[in-house]
Length: 391
Ligand code: PNS
Image 1: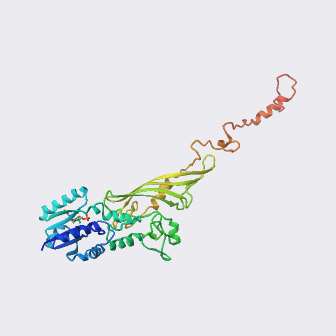
Image 2: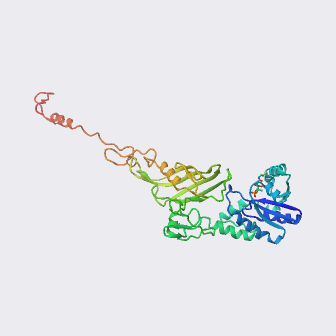
Image 3: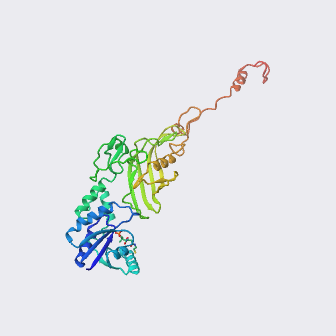
């Protein structure tokens, strides 16, 4: 019996995978589709779910068997009496890594690798792109089997999970980026991309999370993988110093980049918020904005945690504390309505900017000169003589 293994992560299986599996099934007596159990790689679907989906979508072939493995592929091959691996090649970019693995597998255990060129209909297709597209409400019909499409929508459409608060389960507000306050109100929101999301509480404080909580499931843990987000969130309370503050609920524009690095996720970007308060020189109302830079590393973390560091909570990243720190640090201690604000007149208190450059006061006369003036005006007996005794 000629048996071949088709290994992969299949998170989830796409029509590109299915094309290779189906064509391999026409060439071999049996195709074993082997799902890699990889505990270090974040996945959207569990291995059981992936195996189940593969089983459903290959049921019609009759000679396709679904299995799972961990460790080396060559060990799985030895255990199952398999001498060849079949792989789909989408583009030249796949080739280098695939060839390296193929040669290594041959070097280790004489396991052959056969490359099958992908149907051009699917040469651009990958499981990670499919997940990203569904996350943002795009349509992947025709790119994955229907059974997978339903599960993808179901899983990514409830990406943030149900909320458990002191009041019980709270079906919360909407998609990433909707106001945190909305999450607190527990209202339902229909978002433009048809999905309804919920807000999740912070696991440690039980506080509802919302606008500044990000689900990084689709980022993965592959160092170098990155996502960018631009969003506008309502300003939380307490972004203030003595003379300047960001009004609660004001629109804060965020430009963020999430990048997977070896030890966690690096967040870089900026927050631009409206700023109100008083000019430290002329006390006029401020109407300006503040931009804060954000650079923060969130560690994956294990059981031992350092209080000085910030950590991811599973796949969730709660940016709010770092966002607050960055914005408050960027607030000016002595805000000015304009860089060259001349301040107030020390004599009469009018804003000098309004009073204009000609604003002046006669110097106040010294009271002692007043006494002398009195003598000046008196007729004197002797010309030019002043009797100081009198005054
Ligand atoms: O779908 P993927 O994630 O690209 O599949 C990669 C897979 C599972 C085929 C590859 O990572 C693999 O064979 N892993 C098993 C571990 C192993 O044998 N490593 C040595 C390769 S030379």
